[in-house]
Image (tube, rainbow over all chains, first blue to last red; front, side, top):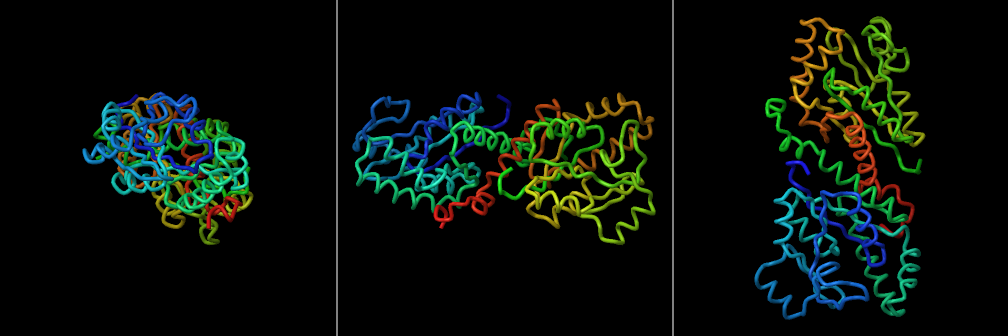
Length: 204
Length: 204
C-alpha cells in the first residue's frame, strides 16, 4: 500500500475464457488489489458461494437495489440481471486498494462511460475453436446453450477494441502476470504519479 | 520473440538518477529488448567503452553524421552533442525487438514528435536532496558542476509531465521491474494486439 489512490480495473471476457482462474492467480500476485463481488439473479453453480463468486439475489431484491441506485452498472444478460454494487468499491478505493470488476461488455461500457479513468482489459480465448472446446469440456451446458454462448462470445469479442488492453488467455498464469504488469504500469502513468509524489518541489 | 512488432521506448532522467543501473537490470529481465547506443561528443568516463555506453565521436565526425541525416534525434547538452543513430534501431525493430533509447529531454521530445507511437518513461530521483547526495557521492564533478547538473535536473524534471510514465528510482531493481511491467503492458494495448493476433475472425 502506498498513499496512492487505487485503480478501478474493468475486466471482461466471454464465458469459458477462464476469467475466474486468471482472477484468482492475479489476486495471489497483488495484495493491493481487491475483487468486486457482483450481484446477480442467476442461479449459483455447484461450488459457488454467496458473497464470494456473486451476491445471489432474487429478481425482486435486484429490482429494489436498482431503484435505490445501489449499482455502478447493471445489465440483463442471457435472461439474468448482473450488477456492480457501488458502496464496497468506494470503500476499498478510499482505503487505497485497486478494485477489479469482472463484468460483461454492456456493464463495462457503462462503467467506462461513467468512470473514464477506469482501466479496461478484455480477456480473450486463444481462438474461437479453443473457446468451444473449453465450453463443451466444462459439461455444464447442452449443445444449444454452447451455441448460444459462442454467438454471445462473438458479439463480445467484437467490442474488445473498446478496451484499453487485450490479454490472450493461452496460459492462466501468463495472463495473470500480464494483468499484474498492466496494473503496475498504470500506477506509473505520469498523470497518476504527478498527483501522488510527495516532493511537490520536484514537479512545479 | 513473437511476431509482434517491438516497441520504441524512450527513457529520460537527470544525470545522477541511476539510469545506467536500471537499464542494466531491465536488459537482464527481457530478452526481447535491445539498448540503442547513442553517439556523443563528450569524453568517455572511466570504464566506459566505445560502442557499449556510447559511440564516442569527435565533433567533426558528429557534424558529418548530422549532414548525412543519420540520427533519429540529436541535441547539444552541457556543451556536447548527443544523437540517436537511426539505422541500428530500424534493424532491431524489423527483427521484432523492442529498442530502448536513453536520451535527454530535448532529444526525447524530438523522438516523441516524430514517432508518436513511442512509449516514453521519465526516471526520477526520489527527491532533489537525494539527487544532490548521489551527484556529490559520485565524486566526478566539482561543486560548480554539481550545481550546474542540479539546475539542469530541475529543468528536465519540469518536462516529466510530457512522458507517458514516471518511474521513481528509490531502488534500481524495483524501478527495473516497473519498466519491465510498462513494456509488458504496452505490448497488451488493444491497438497493438488487434494488429498482431492471427485469429482474424476473432476481431472482425
